[in-house]
Picture: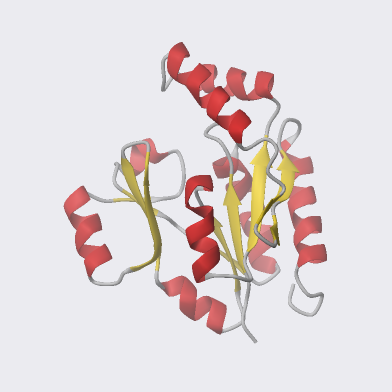
Length: 190
């Protein structure tokens, strides 16, 4: 029996990396692999458990078929290792940190995937982005405007996008993620 791809996405600062790290153990206990992305920036600056590679190494891996999914965003390349296909084939569920802009392409490749949009109230998101101090206030405001473009999306085609609010306590978000997965994936699968 095939596993299901869980495609987590959300704006920068929404807490995807924190959620993934906090949920890693419970997810693995439920038979869900948590993927380590490959990114063209140093691992130290990634802010997540990612593998940092040079653009040349990324391109080599891509040309050799080393990624199941890959995209470019914010001047960086992101790749999901091809190993996920074997995990899915073996019945393991797989959670990836995806991109909203790449969602339709990912759905073409994995039509049964579960898209999960991590949302955050604008004030909370702005505060988080300011606290990170990675971008100018103008860039932060541009991110917030871009985030509003996705605010009303509930589906893409016939596929429902599940929303998960991360404006409050992270433990509540982890609990809500696990509950959502139990309801969205066949009970005998998770």
